[in-house]
Length: 240
Image: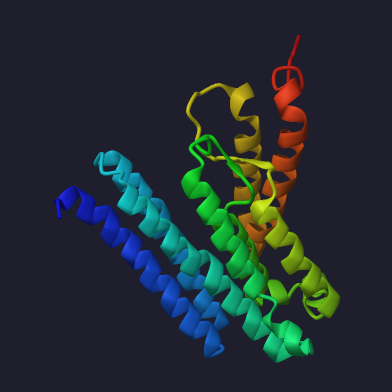
């Protein structure tokens, strides 16, 4: 294999390794460690694409391998953390297997992404890494220490509804904007700027919990842009 193709594949394989170990840790009850492993997997998920583009080593093989790794690290690993929480703290009986929906709809989301050439500057459906970042940080021990989050996570109904809503967002034909900034034009990047600055502030104030709040903001901004942005892209923020 040509070295320039080997490097992105090695980074993607590291993503798979970290996601797999996160699953094992979640099963053993080491959910905080699993959270950090998924966060590191996200770094390698970014790095493989970055180096593939930089080395001009983008390939169909790399694209498929990347999606398989994402299914493990951002589908199965978060679902495993969720499963442990349900099994340990809630009384859902057979419904404790409902985190399987996260895995199924993540797979559907990734498969749809692979065959859709139009998802370059925006995404159809909530990206699986964003979904994973919300799930793992909301179930991190720091988040559970926040009283209203702890109350919500002890509710059977809330957990079931949360999984159903997130699963639906993964495949709904809503436009979710990309954080890539191609042109240094404020008006064209207003949503990215709002999210990035808010995300930094939320992380500074709330730590890892701020990531989950940032994902909620990302969903709200994307829905707003999807509904109003297409028709009024130049009118909403016009100074004329």
